[in-house]
Amino acid sequence: MPAYYFHVRDHGTLIRDSDGIDLPDLKGVRDEIRKSVLSVLQEVHAGDVSRDREFQIEDAFGRIVLVVPFRLAHAPAAVAC
Image (cartoon, rainbow, N blue to C red):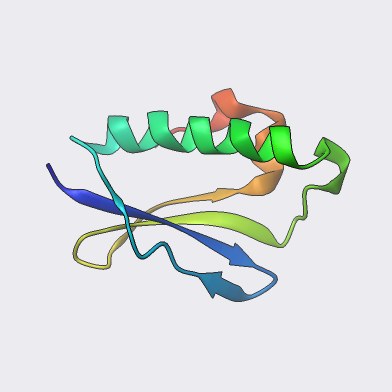
């Protein structure tokens, strides 16, 4: 299975995910990002979700395959590729 890295861009600074996660395909990435978005909602009050933060998902080759702004945490179903 290919590895994907769920980095976080926070106010212009990239916080890299050095571990990554093995997922079968982009559907698996979408499912995992939905879980991550829900986790953000549990940790951060929805009104505090910054417009300057986003998940940036890369594949094992360093290609960005998906970018999801934290503000979409208000609508997890909106995460689609």
